[in-house]
Length: 90
Picture 1 (cartoon, rainbow, N blue to C red):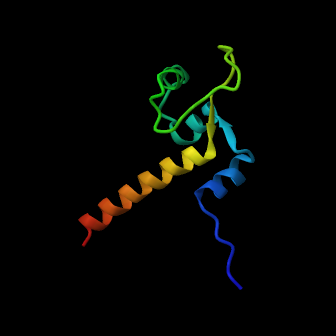
Picture 2 (picture 1 turned 30 degrees about the vertical axis):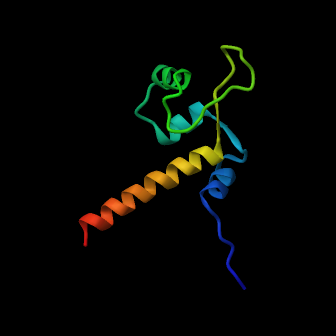
């Protein structure tokens, strides 16, 4: 029997239990070096390597991130790092 194979999107969905996650949770987990003000500035300017959005246009509405977008960024960055590692360690 084939083993259950989970990809990055599946893991993120299991971790966050939602397809969309508040940006500040992502910042806490993956960008701990950013202050809240800097994260919001980057979000307003769409400077993250994934899209951020609001469901409501209120200034108080949280920015959200789709786990698919975050997973794509994580997979891409991992592939780059793995390729660099294999190039330097031949």
